[in-house]
Image 1 (cartoon, rainbow, N blue to C red):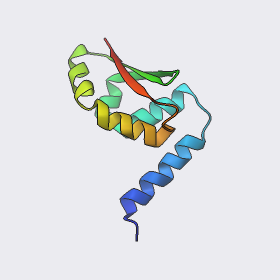
Image 2 (cartoon, rainbow, N blue to C red; image 1 turned 180 degrees about the horizontal axis):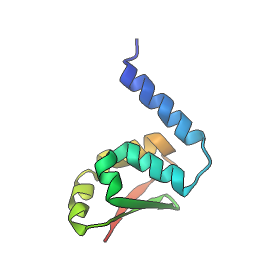
Image 3 (cartoon, one colour; image 1 turned 90 degrees about the horizontal axis):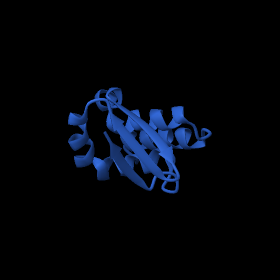
Image 4 (cartoon, one colour; image 1 turned 90 degrees about the vertical axis):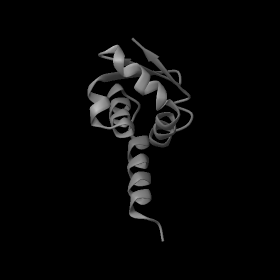
Length: 91
Protein backbone atom coordinates (compact mmCIF):
# COMPACT_ATOMS: atom_id res chain seq x y z
CA UNK A 1 0.00 0.00 0.00
CA UNK A 2 1.26 3.48 -0.89
CA UNK A 3 0.73 6.31 1.64
CA UNK A 4 -1.64 8.98 0.30
CA UNK A 5 1.04 11.69 0.67
CA UNK A 6 3.33 9.87 -1.75
CA UNK A 7 0.52 9.09 -4.17
CA UNK A 8 -0.82 12.66 -4.20
CA UNK A 9 2.67 14.10 -4.67
CA UNK A 10 3.50 11.82 -7.56
CA UNK A 11 0.17 12.50 -9.27
CA UNK A 12 0.63 16.24 -8.89
CA UNK A 13 4.21 16.00 -10.20
CA UNK A 14 2.98 14.06 -13.24
CA UNK A 15 0.31 16.68 -13.94
CA UNK A 16 2.83 19.52 -13.69
CA UNK A 17 5.39 17.74 -15.91
CA UNK A 18 2.78 17.20 -18.63
CA UNK A 19 2.15 20.94 -18.98
CA UNK A 20 4.09 22.86 -21.62
CA UNK A 21 7.17 24.63 -20.30
CA UNK A 22 6.33 28.18 -19.29
CA UNK A 23 7.15 30.82 -16.72
CA UNK A 24 3.81 30.09 -15.03
CA UNK A 25 4.53 26.35 -14.81
CA UNK A 26 7.94 27.06 -13.27
CA UNK A 27 6.45 29.52 -10.77
CA UNK A 28 3.72 27.04 -9.82
CA UNK A 29 6.27 24.27 -9.25
CA UNK A 30 8.39 26.70 -7.20
CA UNK A 31 5.45 27.55 -4.96
CA UNK A 32 4.74 23.85 -4.41
CA UNK A 33 8.41 23.17 -3.64
CA UNK A 34 9.04 26.02 -1.19
CA UNK A 35 5.62 26.87 0.19
CA UNK A 36 3.55 30.06 0.01
CA UNK A 37 5.66 32.28 2.30
CA UNK A 38 8.90 31.87 0.36
CA UNK A 39 7.08 31.87 -2.99
CA UNK A 40 5.60 35.31 -2.17
CA UNK A 41 9.01 36.90 -1.59
CA UNK A 42 10.80 35.35 -4.58
CA UNK A 43 10.61 35.11 -8.34
CA UNK A 44 12.09 32.34 -10.45
CA UNK A 45 13.23 31.93 -14.02
CA UNK A 46 14.34 28.67 -15.62
CA UNK A 47 16.90 28.88 -18.41
CA UNK A 48 18.89 25.94 -19.80
CA UNK A 49 18.55 23.88 -16.63
CA UNK A 50 19.45 26.70 -14.23
CA UNK A 51 16.71 27.95 -11.94
CA UNK A 52 17.54 31.57 -11.11
CA UNK A 53 15.90 32.66 -7.87
CA UNK A 54 15.56 36.33 -7.00
CA UNK A 55 14.44 37.46 -3.56
CA UNK A 56 12.56 40.71 -3.03
CA UNK A 57 14.66 41.20 0.10
CA UNK A 58 18.21 39.91 0.23
CA UNK A 59 17.65 38.63 3.79
CA UNK A 60 15.83 35.65 2.21
CA UNK A 61 18.89 34.53 0.22
CA UNK A 62 20.54 32.60 3.11
CA UNK A 63 17.26 30.77 3.74
CA UNK A 64 17.05 29.73 0.09
CA UNK A 65 20.69 28.66 0.02
CA UNK A 66 20.27 26.54 3.17
CA UNK A 67 17.35 24.69 1.58
CA UNK A 68 18.92 24.47 -1.90
CA UNK A 69 19.45 20.68 -2.00
CA UNK A 70 15.95 19.83 -0.75
CA UNK A 71 14.31 22.38 -3.04
CA UNK A 72 16.33 21.17 -6.03
CA UNK A 73 15.07 17.62 -5.42
CA UNK A 74 11.47 18.83 -5.20
CA UNK A 75 11.81 20.90 -8.37
CA UNK A 76 13.33 17.95 -10.20
CA UNK A 77 10.44 15.77 -9.03
CA UNK A 78 7.92 18.33 -10.27
CA UNK A 79 9.57 19.40 -13.55
CA UNK A 80 12.00 16.60 -14.30
CA UNK A 81 15.73 16.06 -13.71
CA UNK A 82 16.57 17.17 -17.22
CA UNK A 83 14.74 20.47 -16.80
CA UNK A 84 16.20 21.63 -13.46
CA UNK A 85 19.87 20.87 -12.90
CA UNK A 86 20.97 23.70 -10.65
CA UNK A 87 19.59 26.52 -8.48
CA UNK A 88 21.31 29.88 -8.50
CA UNK A 89 20.35 32.72 -6.17
CA UNK A 90 20.46 36.35 -7.21
CA UNK A 91 20.02 39.56 -5.23
